[in-house]
Image 1 (cartoon, rainbow, N blue to C red):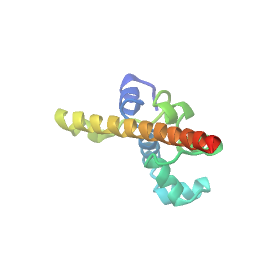
Image 2: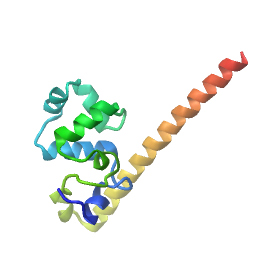
Image 3: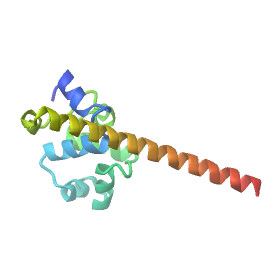
Image 4: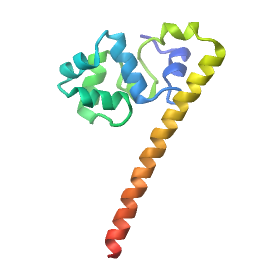
Amino acid sequence: MTENSELRDWYSGDHATFGDRLTAAREAQGLTQAQFAKRLGVKLRTVQGWENDTSEPRANKLQMTAGLLNVSLRWLLTGDGDGVAEPATQENLAEDAQTILNDMRGLRADLTRVSNELGRMEKRLRQIVKETI
């Protein structure tokens, strides 16, 4: 596990989400979602939510996850630091396919960010409506 520009680019916040990095690290350890969930002491649905970027682990589970998967906490969160090697299949992808894949990952990250912002705005709106009634 090294920190070089290829690793930072492939798993960086611009190209991959937390869920992408979690999935890559879990697979690099040869664990299924069920095995990983059992070792971490969480439900399978919880791990699936993390990997699909529909939920995020609490700080204590995040630290345990990094240790269990042998990656740095920083890499897991941002893609910087000690993580896993980029997938070997990337070398085999045509340039156009890689561009599309990168665009899709970027859109997924944007969608997650926008969804989180929408949730914050909705919560704020509910609070304003509640205060005015």
